[in-house]
Structure formats: C-alpha cells, structure tokens
Image (cartoon, rainbow, N blue to C red):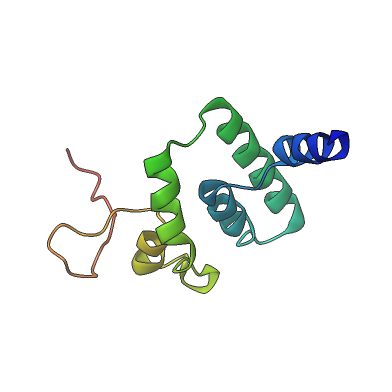
Length: 103
C-alpha cells in the first residue's frame, strides 16, 4: 500500500504534459537553432505556470497539435493550423490573420 501511494505521488508531481504544453513545445521545435529553441521552451514553461490553460484551451490545443507543421509555419495557412493566427473571415486562404496595419 505504501509503495502504491509513493508511486501515485511521484506520477502526480511529474504529471503528463497537457495539450497546450505539447503544442508549445512542438512550436519551439520549429526554431532555427538550439538557443532559440531553449529560450522558447523556457518562455512556454513560464507562461504555463503563470497562466495555466483551461479545459477549453486544452481541447483547442489538442485539435491544433496534429495539423501543426513546421514546414508550413511561415505561411498564412500554417499559422492558422498551428493556432498562431485566426482563419480569414471570408473563408479564403489569402491573408489568414494578416493585418494591413489600419484600424
């Protein structure tokens, strides 16, 4: 019994990564070099601890995870697929999430 409680406590402390943390780490993997990747991972960790994701956020991140692709991250479609931009309002793939700088 004591061993089971210790095992549960260790698992609870180590925990599994949530969908949003996994998505953030996947985005960090898109970094061009190891310094940027390490900085990205530290920022993601700090952001998660200061503003933990809600259940709805986790569901959203889970839906984005499989479609997020580093090869497309610099395209409007890739940004939408990774949750970095909103889909265009008119439904065309044109400038998803882009801003013309106007009000």
